[in-house]
Image (cartoon, rainbow, N blue to C red; front, side, top):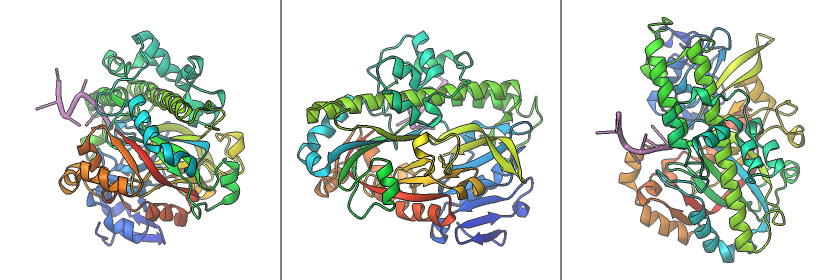
Length: 485
DNA sequence: ATGTCC
């Protein structure tokens, strides 16, 4: 990205684009990142985030996180808080993969205990957790049962034996967001979704076996409180609402394009920013349907966790309980949620869009589980399968600057097409094996798209978040096994 | 991201 005279550096890691940058901007746009990250961002990010700053009801600033890159309409890494009464809701600000997110699970196992069985473990996980385009799950549901899943999320999993009670408390929204209405979801979306519970998907969706290496614990007290220790094995996975969420987004984009200008007189700079007033019938319907996507995704990750626990129990000959396979947390990346934040000193209800951004509430926030109240919300940041991942916590700084938001991952440096030209999946698999990372993938092309250099430097992204004060490092994890969609 | 174009 090239710096023009409209880009002002507010602090070491906060860059502001003045509303005079383009006609229609209601507020500034702010990009968080080190100078290196900002310079490496694609030019489309600046256009997209300044387009977002033109949306009706947007408050304070349109934000882009340090891992930002261009997406559909909004950049991935975008955070947009709208006035709940006068603002709009936009599917492009949430993403097609509604509630794509990360889950982190601890174990009592050490690397030394897992190493001799790693290949067997990853092979079993690959068999038991369906991955890849069009993969189908082991949970067989009739349409009416699937409607229960999307209304209840992880609650449905608990009732059906796929969850421990404490799993729900350790999931954003307790794994079940209120107000999800299956009647606002198309039959087509339900038909696509009903075989997809318990499936990983493709693209950047994966399941990883990781290790807490000596020297990678940045806050010992917090790590201990979260049940983490040196040489420990943990499991991290990333997936979303599959074809179901995609269909919900597609359906409502169509609706919004029909009514936006004709019925509501909203003019936008890019049709990919299609939106409707949040308090309109169309806006409310999408919000209710989108919440079904949130719940589908929570139920998907919960069911996958059930399978992961079964795999570990089989390989290590002990129950998942005896192996200490407790959740650390589950975060959503692609959402819009009603939250209270101060605007000009007054607490107001806002619709906070986060697209490829993680909620990062600070210590003491009422939405946090009791055990994390003193520390802040766990933030799970997935890196590439070559480089490692992080556990961070939310901060008071995030509450003040970014509506309680931070980065969600590394962010891509190149397109998938470019990655396929530059890397070969089969070769990458061999190289990783030689470096002690055992990878199974549904597709070699898909594997090539996820090679380390296709992502920004995760350490740099996390460093930018910390310097900006929007989250703090707790632990870094190193990959040893990966199931790639 | 996605039954990677109905």
